[in-house]
Image (tube, rainbow, N blue to C red; front, side):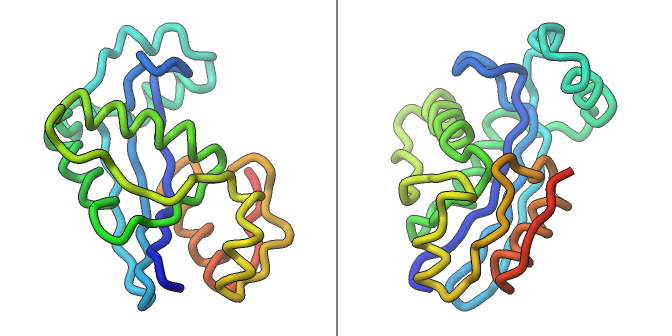
Length: 169
């Protein structure tokens, strides 16, 4: 492998680009196999959560705690640290959903910061070429992600690296 892999997921207050990111989780695997993780909650407009479907709203209210939340500026530092070197391949259920929002989030907070860099993000099930290139068996990846939190991301990285499978929730 000659580029890092980033397995990531975000939780947002809705599907629009104007909605807020309230959670970010990622595992970055370097070409030498070294891994670093990030899992943060982010300050956001909690009123936007009122329009979420009940299960998503309940998840937000059950897990989000203001006293654990990063400021938006501090969250940008964590997010840019994940993507800053080596133009990683991004792996996730719908990674372009996450990367579009992360790019906008960072550019809004730090307008003069260089844009985040990554290879064209594709859903897990479309990573066959990347898997083949790295000798990883990709058959069996779910079409809908189980990667909603850091525990699921750990399972995904273990399976991705070992050629195993990740089962959905």
